[in-house]
Length: 427
Image (cartoon, rainbow, N blue to C red; front, side, top):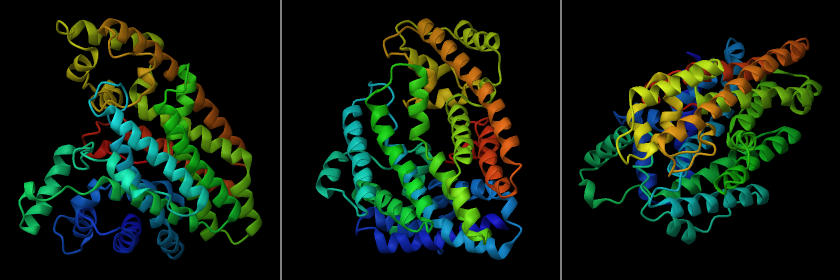
């Protein structure tokens, strides 16, 4: 099975990375236990790390390339380097939970931690070595729980309990896996990922896209936007979709194409880059809004949000976010509900403040959702037009297929609840 080939190559590289790159720590021991082939809970560990889901998604993206098993094996041998980096990106993203509205007691500490980490990542990429002050990152991450900072808290805690049982130690006698080690690993794995890209122009392009992600996150956390369109652009820049697609397409060309001129054209063609950017906008909108709301008319959007307020009115003195958490777990609102629950930035929360009353919040949500749906529908039309023009060039067809399939994958993914396997993290 194609996915298992990718997964097995990635597990091997992941185990080597843990052994060679992680400093001595509780986190390293927990990771070694998780990846150990003798561990009866290894499949759970791989699921919680998102490696299993990522292999599922990338096998789907490479659908047109997997028939040639010899070349597929060659591709998967290199591909694991990016997957290891994305494993640690999941952890960094989880640490950012709670930075939407300034309502959590640890908001300031988390903000400082993420800002420092992003700056260190950019400096590391610029210099080609890990630029991380261990003492500072330890101080900034103190008392932030790696176990609790997870979208599937109960399952993550259960996995750590199983680790403690295996070690025959009481949970309250062991320190949690250290966050700073995971952030160190994030930088180390990112450098590995960038350094193994062979094509010079592609390596520069992808590195710059990755750098843009971290600078954009800091700008987002500084609220450097004054319109919903500026927020959407920042949210696009914070995603890994652009460097991920650039890497997927570049690696495919390295393995499957013999003509260097064709490889260079794929790496440097501005119209292919525009297509990737369009795909990223669609994935961003799907991530924040969800597949269902984006397909509705303005009138339908207003109706569903207004109905929520009428059928489930807020309690007296209930904050709007507590009310929304309580009543909005309907499939229509899966993505927005998740981001309100975990207090994350979402384009549908533009211009909404913690102290607003629920009625005012609903009005703003309606306006934001109508804007997003209109943008999505227009962008889908553009996406199809770009595909039609670019697909006339034969060596663009598989790159186009890879980029288009990341959209269809997320259309299906984000129609599901994030608490279900069908709706869990992808990229």
